[in-house]
Amino acid sequence: MKCITRVLIGFGCLCAGALAPATAVASPTKQIEAITDKLRTPAEGSAEREAILDGLRRHWQASRNPDDGKTYQGRITFHVGYLKVHNGWAWVYADLRSSLPKERFPENSGFLLQLKARRWEVMKMPPMDDNGDGAFKPSPGDLEGIRKMYPSIATDIIPVEKRR
Image (cartoon, rainbow, N blue to C red; front, side):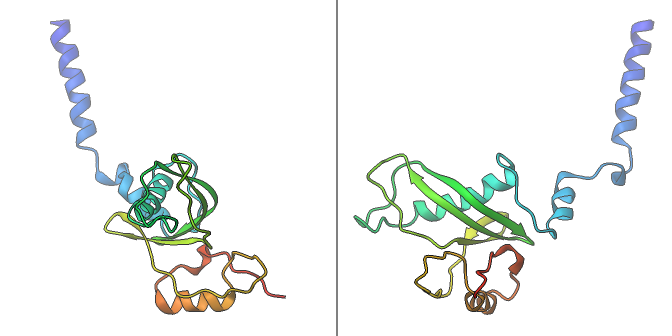
């Protein structure tokens, strides 16, 4: 009899938890939506950061190596120097590396990604100023070009070069 009582009490507790109001516990999706409107840097190892870098990786796996015209075959990894995310947009400065030493990547001045249908995609960039001073940050003029191309962009993700 004690065994049956324990089983019924345990079952009752499970049912009570299942019948709790939906507002008592926020779903993971709701939690993610709640933070999408804030400028942030996803933590190393976080699912969001990995998803962004996977989008960047897909872009390079579909690209051709400028040295030989072939697609990249090695495992592509990144050394991230800058990553900001806001409202479904991300800006990344990363040094790209391949597990195959012969595969090299061209210089880059940052990558713009947008979250589309739950996947991060690298977006085409407008022509950028070449100011010849070695600075990689977009100029205020570059930012205007990006804003014209993507009116919904959260421009606070982009580190704009301060001109003197």
